[in-house]
Length: 128
Image 1: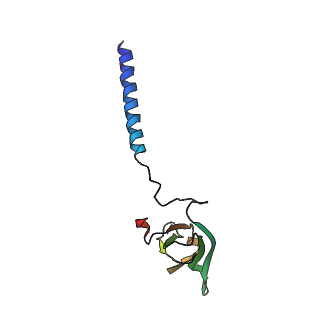
Image 2: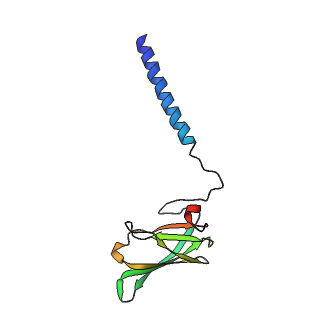
Image 3: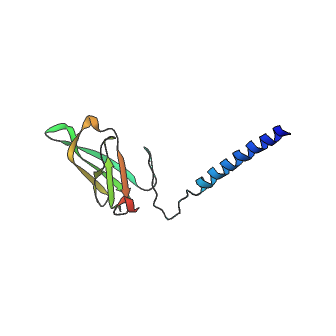
């Protein structure tokens, strides 16, 4: 009899813990009015990036001082990229879907190991 009681207490504790974990997970939902966000090395809903071109420095062709690419839809007001995983985010400008990111300090080609982009239709991604 005592054995069955111990089993029931353990089973009840497991159900309570599992139920409370589900309650916390269920609270983390987003409304349909939020802007789509995503991260991928493939297609992500929201914006499409095409025609990425790295601008090599004429006098030092082992360095890059700018990146250009096109985005669709063209309405983004906030664009930043990161081309060095350990580097910082670089500001970009969007002119009717053609994005230009000019670097204050050129990157060595061998240091370019990623292409991450933050694109938002809000003036500041923190507002999105």
